[in-house]
Image 1 (cartoon, helix red, strand yellow):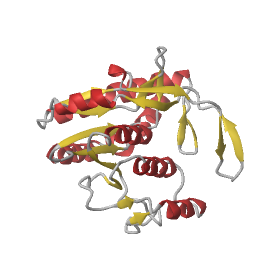
Image 2 (image 1 turned 90 degrees about the vertical axis):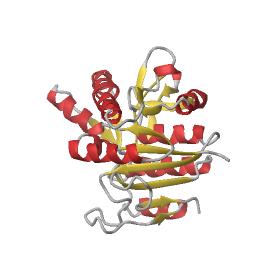
Image 3 (image 1 turned 120 degrees about the horizontal axis):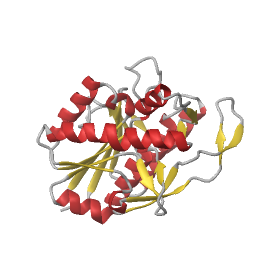
Image 4 (image 1 turned 90 degrees about the horizontal axis):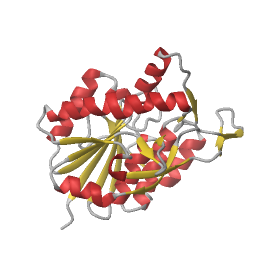
Length: 268
């Protein structure tokens, strides 16, 4: 029988709020069985950058990372956020181990080439995202050895290129890539949790959760502008995971990481 694995991805809006993070960690600690956590921290990185006089630039829901911003995200993601989460889980009896993609060569990536991106006004332009990584491979066997050894990986959204360079990598992409790799070893459920109840038909109405989204419906919701900004890469990564062996993907509020509420992503 294939063992179940819960991969929880938590967004920056949750990790920067002490009460929300404490609640999330309490729920995560109570989850039975094998599990791991992937975290963001973009809002905290933006705040930290601003305090240092560094401007944050976003295109299509994704961060442009120059040399100064790379230093910030490395400190915030791999240090402040990751170790706070690890310490919080240790206090709840969880044997958490904090990792970036560079640790143990777990996640190798390449620097994203110039990419054509659709802008908010409908036009397209070529964008240089800077020190941003697109995932090439995940060492699933190393993660399996940690998990089977009783450790709970807590993964920060940083990867490396094998040539000494840290690369900022979208946390949703990391969660999806790790889920795909581990789907060969476990029955994987991937849960994207953040400060909303799920994918909302009306961004101002928390009760307007769309309970189920297929790939065809997602394309239409994007065309209508209902799915936009940072939700677009989340949806894209959800479908990549489904296509490559992940049993279930759920997008939900950080209070509901058991997957009983929120938006379920299905292929058809």
